[in-house]
Each structure stands twice: as structure tokens, then as C-alpha cells.
Image (cartoon, rainbow, N blue to C red; front, side):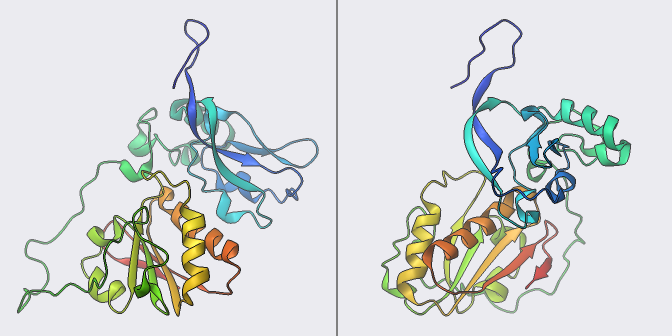
Length: 261
């Protein structure tokens, strides 16, 4: 629900935005440089604060660099993210090169709002690139359902399995998804940006806690919003109380694996 109290006032709506735990914050300042929109700064007490809420896009790129876990993305009422205002702010404080990286400033078009993962672009391909398959490529999927909202942590096929938690888009971007990532694994898919993710951490934690997983891999895209899935998985492991290493695969929009750890 959106509302504005006075004519010309920016509408307020529930949205995702970064929240800072001042008790945990140690003033390292890493989040202030990780935020491309310049939404974070250190105050007089050496604690991280939001400069202005309209500069925060809510994608949480700053979360991954905080060494003490003082940051999280919450959903609450706030003024909407304003990419033009963020661009102008970074232009004044950091210069043109930094301003070009602000969400909404892609290709020099300040004010083109939204997640960089939704920016329209073409991926160049050579016509007919790659060898033609000699036969139909078999699916490596061995269970159903796969969407995190629908799976049951008590499903017997999860027992002792190698689990792959994959962002929806990875299977479309990576041509060899079944052979390179899925073969030999059970699968759960989710989208940290478009799904209603309430309850995801708790469900995954139960799945991890009760099934004695042999391994856990999370596969995400290179776009910033996709990092939320890795954070969700790591929180689930922590909540489960199980000492389980999280392996990570990052897929580029060009279909190449850019990180495998």
C-alpha cells in the first residue's frame, strides 16, 4: 500500500531496505564503499548509518562485506529508491566513474530505475556455435517438486543427498546445467528477488537439520539481487546447527561459470 500525506510528497510503501545493528557495527567502513549508491556512511560515533533512505536500493550488496553481521535487509515502509537522486549524490561525492555504477545509471542514463539484473541487453552468440548433439540430451532431474515453496523437508529423497540450491535463472543461462551442476544432486530452486521468501530460511534449515546432507551447493547469477540466495542458504545452515560447508557456483549472463568454490 502506497500513500503520500501532502501533494508532491514522495509515496511511502513497504519495500526492502538495509537495516543496521549499531550494537554489532564496529565501524570498519567496508559497507560504505561496497554500496555503489552511496547510501551508507559512518557517523560521528564511527557507526554505519543510512545517509538517505532514497539512496538505498535494498539489494544488499553491502551485506557480504560486513565482518560482524551488523547489516540485514528488512521489509518496512520507506520512501522509494530514487536512482536519479543516488546518481547525483555519488556524482558529487565520488565522481563520474563511480556514478556510472549506480543502479539506474547504466549506459549513462541516470534515472533508468530498477535492478541491474533486469537491464535489457543482448548476449552475442556465433550462429550455430558449438557442436550439434548426437542424440537427445537426457535430463538429470531425479525428483519433484523443485520450487522451495513446494518441496517438503521430509521428502525421503533428500536423505544423505548432495543438495543443489539454484537461482531460477541459472538453468537457462548455463547451457550445460544438467550435466555440469545437477547430475547426482537433488534440486531446490528459488528467486530471492521475485519469490515471497518468508519462511525460506526456516524450511531450508529443517531440510539440512533432518536429512544428513552429504554436500550443499548454491548456484547464483552474477546480478546483485541473486546474492540474496547465497545469504539465505548460509543463514539456514547457521540456524540448522549443522556443520556443513556451502559450496558456491556463480554463472554469468553469458552462460559461463565465473566462480566455482
